[in-house]
Image (cartoon, rainbow, N blue to C red; front, side, top):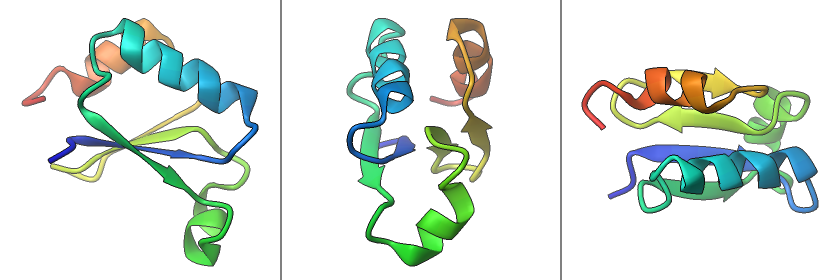
Length: 79
């Protein structure tokens, strides 16, 4: 089971950057991507904030922009 969810939309260059950062940080196997464009509830929540990374254990969210330091701090506990 994935421990992180990456909320994104297709053709979002910032989402591509976030995904590359996840892979570079060794988290490539620990997240699931969720496209928000056809999900009105998620679109309402995240449309102007994507990419957004969410932990499944405690529901914490990390909003863009974030770098490797913020990503490490966000994922360091129990992931």
